[in-house]
Length: 449
Ligand SMILES: Cc1ncc(COP(=O)(O)O)c(C=O)c1O
Image: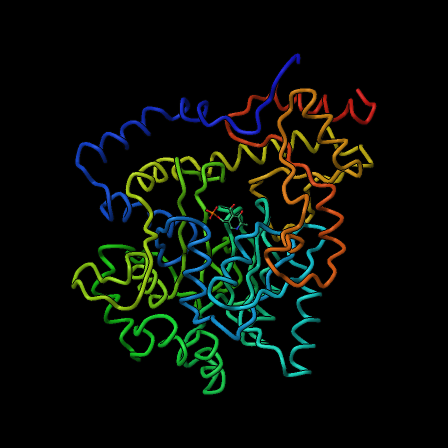
């Protein structure tokens, strides 16, 4: 093989920021700061500031973030949750593991949940009255956000909790019009009926048995949060209340009740092991997650507030992530530059669909540069045979794995793209000449120079 271009090169990336990562490591090791210490709190504050929420709570994985969010919202047995058919399986597994049922919906041409199909589903559910849809998890796949304006509007109309699976889209943003307010809206805004709907969708009333007693104690959330806020997730002094924001550019993870993040090593912000977080503007949710990640314990009082989990983001990982977070804006710009290079060189190939969408109200941070080739495996095999490492995720959609026992209601777009997707190398450590090599191999597959 003449050449090799890796999909990612973690050792090379380490070399690029070695000094700062090493300093972070020696600080943690030298002080013995292993669990729930200053590095974690600092990272949480910086992550919340980056996303534009009041709080961030570090967890062990993206899966934990989804799971924790659903529990905080009181989702459980008897409930249904709308999820896209084309996503990583964890989105649906989190729903199943709180005892609820995922209701799958096909995606559109941008790989994200098809809001027309969601609306049909919700309208039909409303008509027959038999469905128990309580929440929706839009996934912002590959670095491009789902249509959150539309989703927030549907959520408001049908009284749904919105949990954003933003695991692949840290830094992506979208314009928000005043009609699509982020959750949770101000209590008391919109009259008694609207308040009752909000409370119902946040699961109060039933969460007492299912989650923790926190929600059973009206008004307790704020008091308890005041006790822990300085330790974990100090509100940003400049963060506006969500209800006060007019038309604005709002980042992924700042729209729903929570945004869920994964710091799996190859994510746009990757750690050196598993990691995750939620972002939220809701103090009760932040408090819930802060306790539940530590087996339900309030670490100041030692009181257990429910049966929780062990899923705290490691201090060492938080220290590494905090270093990398500082680079994220420039790394996103680099990713967008690589994408522009791919676009300029590949957009004349009719059998290849590129991930470029002409929507000025949304940007793309290119966690993945996922193309669709009509030649499917022949295309990806050809690239591999020429030394280009590519990712062909989701060839078999998760709902077709028998053991998962999920309902396949027919998802033509998901089926088509699962045969065709192929992610080209996209990372900040790649050199321009490597990108050019990938381009030349792709073009040669299509018989072009
Ligand atoms: C869309 C999506 N959701 C959820 C997850 C789960 O994240 P983690 O692997 O950190 O549990 C991932 C990670 O691969 C993901 O890509």
